[in-house]
Amino acid sequence: MRTGVSVLPLHGGKAPRWLFSRMVKLAGSIAEAIVIEYGTEEFLRRIADPFWFQSLGCLLGFDWHSSGLTTTTTGAIKEGIRKKSYELGLFVAGGKGKVARKTPDEIFVVAEKTGLDGDALIYASRASAKTDSALLQDGYSIYHHAFFFDNKGNWAVIQQGMNERKKMARRYHWVSDKVKVFHEEPHAGIKAERKEYNVLDLTSKKSRDNKRGIIKLLKNENPDKIVKLYTRVKGLVFPNRHPLLPYKDINPENLYRILKKTYDLAKIDDFTDFYMAKGVGATTLRALSLLSDVIFGARPSYEDPALYSYAHGGKDGYPYPVSRRDYDKSIEVLERAIKMAKLGRREELKALERLSNLFNKRRSFSNDI
Image (cartoon, rainbow, N blue to C red; front, top):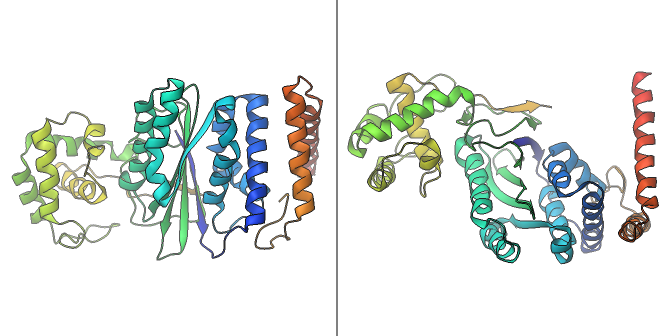
């Protein structure tokens, strides 16, 4: 299930080298401590929680809207556990931009060494990326994709899209628990700073009939007839949606080429087979969704599924500058606790747990007051 989405403002600046080197050490130690204490599945569940991940980014030295929190935090975790991944049974593939495109290759290397089902993991990576870029058309272009997985085949995804015009980013979180299909409400909740309008959400249950209409079109009509139907409605504007601009947004020639390819390969019986096919993207799906609406009266969802919604300071100086001395002390304490835990002495990790419980009790008491 996809567990949430965060929407963040974009700002300039990046983490200085002295801070990132410490982030790598602390992020790696935090991941190791969680795996030792609770196992890899728990780490994946936590990393898939957008609020926990945001808190981790703040803990590592970013204030709540520091530019690069997502990419730098995932990068720090990846680098922090790189040398001990096989020992922990926890791996990270992908990242930002060109690195994201190497995700399948990185998964394959680990699968070859561990005996994991690499094809299944690579499919999960691709399907989650395509769902957020093609089925949920919210105006954010995916540019970061990080794939976390363990030696049991469990996985989590953190990917981020950017809306350059609005100077905003939206982060998407996935976890493999309870995933049945990728194209229907794979998220448990989406948290965002703002809702968007004119969103086409083909992952919504409200879009189920619309997707059935798409498959009905593909099974019963050849590409020539579908494109003719599409060009008939090219001038219509429907309530609560973008005007249809066929020769700007959806070129009939490109639509025909994609439909001819899928039609010649085989009869489509399942929506997953179609939307995961190479070349089928957001514009093709938008055109067919419109046709399904016009011909069968199967309206898709146009509602944004998003819901409204510091330990070491922040790199930008908010809420206060990062103290190198305090940061190094945190790394030292956590690394010592992990070392002792590996030797069978868990007193220091338990002490940290007691501090956490005490803090939660005090916070609960304060809230009651």
